[in-house]
Amino acid sequence: MAKKGKSGDSEADMKRQQAAATAIIKKRDELRSKLAELDRELRALGPAAKGRVRPRNDMNLVEALRKVLNGKTMGVTQVSEVVQKAGYKTFAANFRTIVNQTLIKNRKIFKKVSRGQYTAG
Image (cartoon, rainbow, N blue to C red; front, side, top):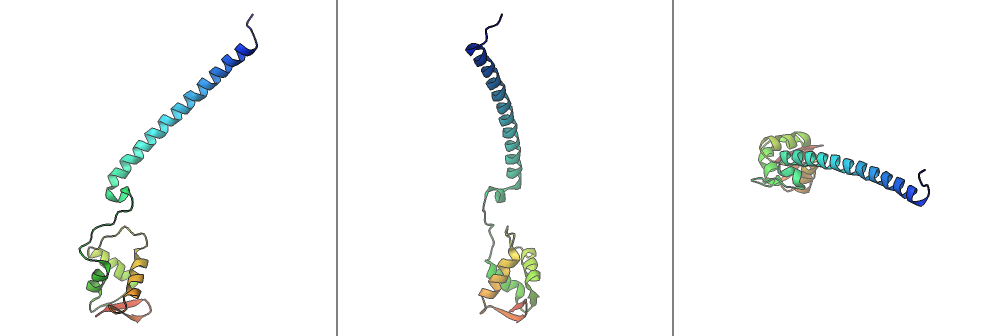
């Protein structure tokens, strides 16, 4: 007849703890594997994935806007697209807003022709 009592309870507790530890270790290993995969995906994205990295441009945004708008009138959305097509690099999700603020802030360089329409001259 098996003894019941303290030693039997602790043996059962030990088995439950071992099973719980095994499950947690398995889950940890799965998460490490997923994390390694995410790290590979981030490395594939290049410098932008390393955090807040500013791209290098030959000229600042004001100069790029002046070059694009010189003698032309464009809306904010159009000029933001044209500046990027001309080679200005940005990772900003709100680049149009940045362009709009730059145009407003530099009134000596950019003239507002009508609502949302600017020129440089």
